[in-house]
Image (spheres, rainbow, N blue to C red):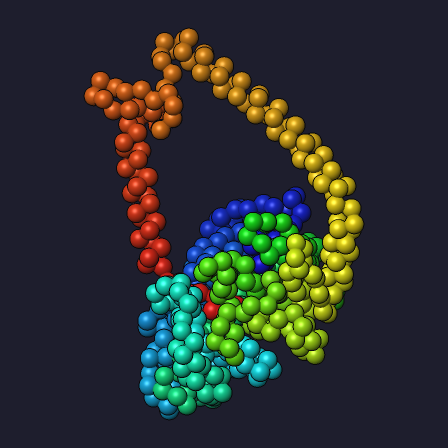
Length: 455
């Protein structure tokens, strides 16, 4: 997975609200984020111009349009209407949808169907789509039946006038494995047309960039493919002399899955078998000229696996980093611009395996050294708090009462537990928290989700 955000020189990390263009200063980074497609987007702009329009509203409007066209979670989206249609005639769609479907079909052909946007019914069958999530193993006969009703060969694309056509009335398509990347590209283009040259756009871990930060490239971190370990494998600079205006996307099997009797089933479905992938490839990161391309290829190579995937990446001139599980460690293989990174990671792994004790000792020393200032700071802070409380008791002649739900709560004459922090009964604090939780739940239910398909 890509680290959501960029790594930059701390001296340039000046964030401010874009609603206040008069406050912009040279060397500043404007940043804003929000929900979209069932995930979140983050935008960073170095040396932002004086936007004539409200840039937030423009970005939100663009992302809503992409969602309205390509989401399978919205019943009235363009894709949902096409999926419901039982006609085998040409179905008029937007030029944006045709652009995305056309590239998806190209990747499908090059991978022999390992990437296939008609895989939606299988995604639902395995409890990873918008349908009810049963997390139960489907019957092989049901899988075979669905396999006979899917296939990119059953879908046709026409650019002028833009339209889609299915040869089977029940055929459905799912653009979740490519739509986020397309949206990233479109936001980058939008910001460029609005006068912002140096931008970093991230949606759910997929990243697109243009320009730089005062001559320094934007950087994106690739994480270890393990939910228990958020360490960064490497920080890859984008927009270097070797390749300009780059994007990066990562596909992995380690975050979205379920287990049955100790067997893990990944959300990445192989359209050729109708089942989740079961090879040892944990993640694939792809560096490319557009995020749409990187997004689609990351999914396709994840399905193909390390051997066939890297071979195809070499043939197509792709820059990739594959991380494969190997007992208690990882095997790294890279192509193109990421090949040297893979070699460096492999050397570091070999060094750790040869000197495991020194590695543990070194880490122990680092942990001990890093804990000393924390202990000192904690002791000083605790002492200050105790001293402050003591002064309050001595001069205010008040008993000490704790925060809401704390150990030192006290009751008033009516039997309510009061809170020295907010001066309100703890019951009211609880009511407020419950109300906030209900509001968040309602908001979550109302916001459309665009699952990442078989990415």
